[in-house]
Image (cartoon, rainbow, N blue to C red):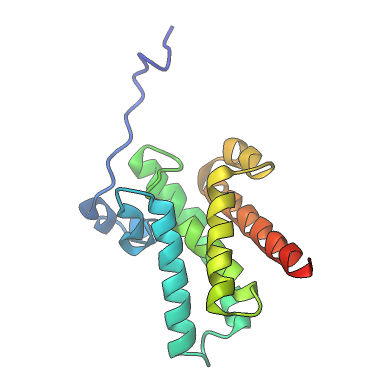
Length: 174
């Protein structure tokens, strides 16, 4: 009988720039390199989401409208299911820490729905989103444990985005 200690299951692969550039799915799943941070890759992925959202919305406001952002996040979710499935399989870890596309898509969703869209409201959204993504209160923790593959990787962060938006709405109402 094998136990986890003596299991012959292959060990996860270390995420590197070379690995990321080996497949288009890896580039996306690893947040264009933001997930390769040796410390807190999820936070760096969320910061990448914030920076890219602000830059694209400011530079091309006629393209990156709120409606278009919703379409982008929906398409990004679908793409993320595939990229995280492929990258997790190649890394031999279904929800490898270097995969941050889930944070990027979920935080873009938060940013497009946060009103007013001020720097302070975006910063509050960043802090609240990171809290829910790291702590994973129910049902986020349930989805994190029970939904597998690319869909599971993506879904728990969408629920964290919903919690973030709910918390910010409640805070504003009080």
